[in-house]
Length: 305
Length: 194
Length: 105
Image 1 (cartoon, each protein chain N blue to C red):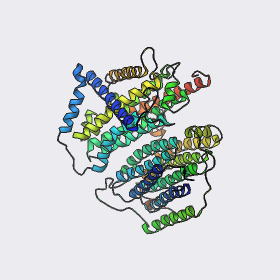
Image 2 (cartoon, rainbow over the protein chains, first blue to last red):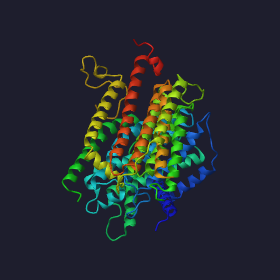
Image 3 (cartoon, rainbow over the protein chains, first blue to last red):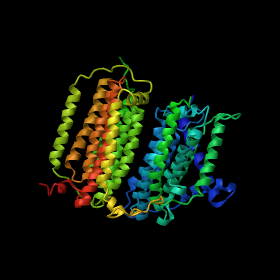
Image 4 (cartoon, helix red, strand yellow):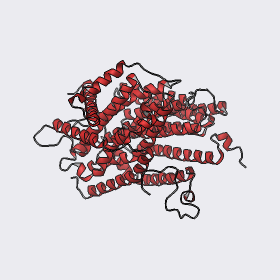
C-alpha cells in the first residue's frame, strides 16, 4: 500500500535524481569531464544557495518569485504521471493531457521570469520563449496524442500496456523525435536555447541569482529528465524487456534516452528563434499530422491489437 | 440520507477554489499592472479547473488549464503591446461608465442568485460513468458528432478570418505588384530555404 | 451540506463570475480588458455546466459538451478579438473602444 506522502516523496526523489543525471550528462557532453560531473551540479547548487542575491530596479516581485518557484513544481508535477512499474502517482483518465498542460503552464512561468525583473534582456528572452512555445505546442500535442491514439487511451499506464507486442517508436518515429525535441524546447536547452542565449546576455536567466537561479535551473533539468522517462514510457515500451525486472529496464531506457538527447542536443547549433518558429509551423506540424494519420490508419487496420 | 455526492473535504475545496476564482476575477479589474491582471485571470481559470477536477471532470479540468494558460500567455503579449503603462508603474484608471457597469453586473448576479436559490433543483439522475473522459470522447465521436463538426468548421473559419484581419501584408507586398518575384520579400527571413 | 445546497453554492460562484465579467466587459475602455471580462463570463458558464453535469445528469454527456463549447467560444472570442484589435490599430492607431466609435456615422 502506498501512502500518499511516500508516493509524493518517491516522485520528487525520482524527478530530482533524473534531473541530476541529466545535468551530469550535460556537463560531460559540454566539458568532457569524467565521473566528477556527477558532483559538479550539486556543488554549483550549493554555491547558488550561498550566493548573494541581486535585484533590479522596480521588479514585479510577486510574479517573479511565483514564476521561479513554479518551474520546478511544474516539472515535478509532470513527473507525477510518468508510469513507473505499471503505476503512476497520479492516475487520471487524461494523463497525457496533464503532461501537456504542465508544459503549457511552464510557458507562463518562463515568460513571467522574463517579465518579472523589469530588465530588457530578460524580457526579450521571455518573448523568444513564448514565440518558440506557440510554435512548438502544436507539434508536441500531435506527438503526444499519437501515442494515445495507438493505445486508445489517455492513461499513461494503458499506453505502456499497449506496447507489449510492438514498441510505439517503430510505428511513430516522427512523434518520438518531436516529443524529445519538445523537451528541449520547453526547457530552452540545446538547439532551442535561444531564450537564454549568449546574444542577449543570458536572456530569461540573466537577472536570476541565488535560490531563484537554482530553482529555475533545477526545474529545467528535472523537466528534461522527466521527459526522457516519459519518452521511454510512451514510445520505448516502458518497463518491458527480458530477464531484468521492469523498473530496471525502465531506468536503463531512460538513461539511454538521456544520453541520446544530450549527445544529439549538444551537437546541434542553437536555432535562431525565427528559424525555429518557421520550421515548427511549416515542417513539424504537417509531419506530425501525417504521423497521426498513419497511426490512425494502422489502428483501423488492427495493428495495435 | 447522510451520503452526499461530494465528500466534506471536496466540498471545502470547491468552496475555497470558488472564492479564489471570484476574488482573482475581481482582481483583474483592480490591479494596475497588466501582467498581474492577465495572471489574475489565469488564477481564476485554474481555480475553476480545480473545481472541475473535484467534480470528477478530469479531462475538462486539464484541458481548461492547458487552453487558458496558453491563452493568457498570448494575452499577456497583446496586453503589453496595446496598453499604455503595462507594468502599472504609474497607476491610472481606464474605465467608462463605472457605476452603470457595476450596477448591471450586480443586478445580473442578484437575479441569477435569486433564481438559483428559489429553484427546486431535481435530484441526481443516474450514475456518473466509470470514465468521464470516455463518456465525453464517445459523445464527441458519436451522438454529438454534429456539434463537433460545426465547432471544427467554426474554428477553421476563425483561423482564416483572424489571420486575414490581423495580417498587414498581402501577396502584393510579398511578391511585388506584378506577383513575379521568385522569393517573397519578408521582413523576417525564417528558417526554410525559399 | 446537502447536495442541493452544494449545487446552489457552486452556481452562486458561477453567477458571481458572470456578474464580475459583465462589469468588466461594460466598464473597461481597453479592448483587451473588455475581452478579459467576456472570458470571465464564459468561465462562469463553464463552472455552471460542470456543476450541472455532476449534480444533475452525470449519465448524459450533454453538460460536458457544453463545457467544451464554452472553451471553443473562448478560443474564437480571443482569436477574433485580437485580430480585430490589430486590424483597428493598424488602420487608426486606436486601442480603446471609445475611440473606435469616434468617427462612425
